[in-house]
Length: 267
Image 1 (cartoon, rainbow, N blue to C red):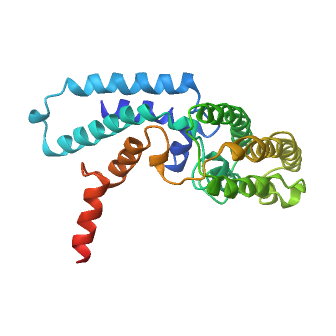
Image 2: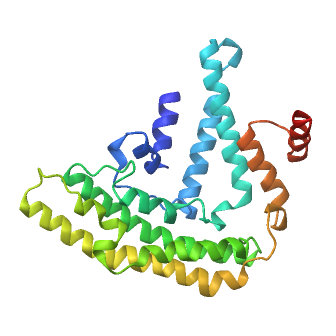
């Protein structure tokens, strides 16, 4: 059960698989904020919730009880998360693919660039990012419609982060780093093909995608962003904040209770 739960879960988050040294999905970039993906993930969660319920926890050994409780918690949090339509804020100044990809694409993170296939895998991931970005804009618009938007103070910081990836000087673009550091074992023909493919990807995929996101935030989203801060000022924001506090602290305490506990500890 645990093996199946883990293996199938990797297919919903292949970049996480790459981060764990599992290279089977290095070419995949799921559109994880699109409705079809979210529906499949929901069905996966419900299926394993039903399977988990078939086990009698009392009959498990101490190690399996821990595994049971962890999976049970993950499933509970995943289903609770669905209530909040968090895909309507697909990225922020701290989290999300637009800020993660430069690190991966530089060749200095966990995305491998050791073989020709590694270089080809990354090009496929870039194609997936372009599709994801279009969905991100559509989802931001859905958030605007229900006033589930980021504070202006944060959007202002996000715009230059995106614009930083639009430099047209290929040699200075961070996504060109793997080309500059190709293994010496590659043949001249392989190096030339990779060089041309990466130049093309940067000019026709990466730069236009980042520019599209930056222009959207600047011209459409920023005027609709809020002047308030904190989750409480969004629809269902109080429950959303409590959810994040619960996930971060793995307690059932309210934010106020945690705050009061902290004050007592200091005292």
